[in-house]
Amino acid sequence: MKSSKRLLLSSLENFWLSLGLVILSVLSAWGSMEAAPPAVDVRLQGIASFAKPSPMVSIRAGWFLMGTNREDLNRHSFESHYDNTEFPQRRIWLDAFQLDQYEVSLGEFLQFLQGSDRMVSLELRGLIWHLISIHFIPDQALAPWPALYVTWEEAQAFCLDQGKRLPSEAEWEKAARGIAGNIFPWGAQDPSQDIAVFGAYHVHEIPLVANVDSFPEGKSEWGIYHLSGNIAEWTNDWFGSDYYPIMPERNPPGPKSGRYKSVRGGSWKSLPVMLRTATRGGAFPRERSANIGFRCAKSSNP
Picture 1 (spheres, one colour):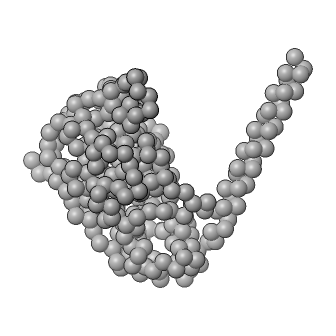
Picture 2: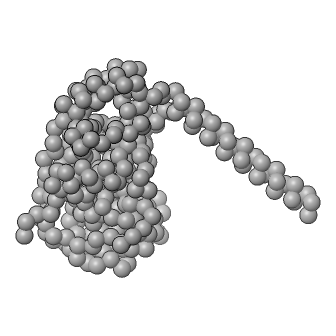
Picture 3: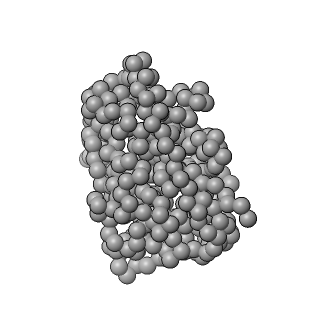
């Protein structure tokens, strides 16, 4: 008994030691990205000056397939690689709506923050300062990057300021997979570096993203860009792990409350399976991440 207890204590000590080393390595990586000086403010204004709004794409009213049917015969195919939050597959009706063709750009987001007297987060200021002082990226080249380090509230406020809103999770999925239930926005072809931005890694969390209007080969059947990879996207809905079996079949609004907001689409860091149109994720509404941005939606007139 004493021997087993000593073994357990030793295992716990090794666990906490390993965890401490991981934390120290993360802090060391972030510590190398110095805080931005006041001089960055001029560059933030410069990036915002190159902002270009996204056109919107109309998605007609009708039924589509949402979610995934459970299959256990072929465990390693993209068709059957799912988690328990996305089944059963349902036929869902959505009224007509519009969705931004491109993710909201960094230039647009900075322009909004400046115009609404909102602070640019320390994370975003630090990243931009690093990019312009270490990598010498010009303002015009940063403006079409996707917005990132955006909280859910900031994303929603941006959309409302534009006379729009965040898309529901169902609207996002219909825009991504089309009427026929595509596995990826572009169809059934496995993801590749010519189609989407994914599977990247940088020790200092420098986002390895692409311009919001790039990679036309990866657009959805509606002509919408970067619904898989590049930057994951906030939706309006609370994340409900058991919502699919009970959601209404017409215009599901998502759960009434929750802990996380739904995030869809995968990012520049994601594994290929996370780029599936049915894959679901969530994040705390106040989270700021180098992996999460957004795009806006708008209800169409009846």
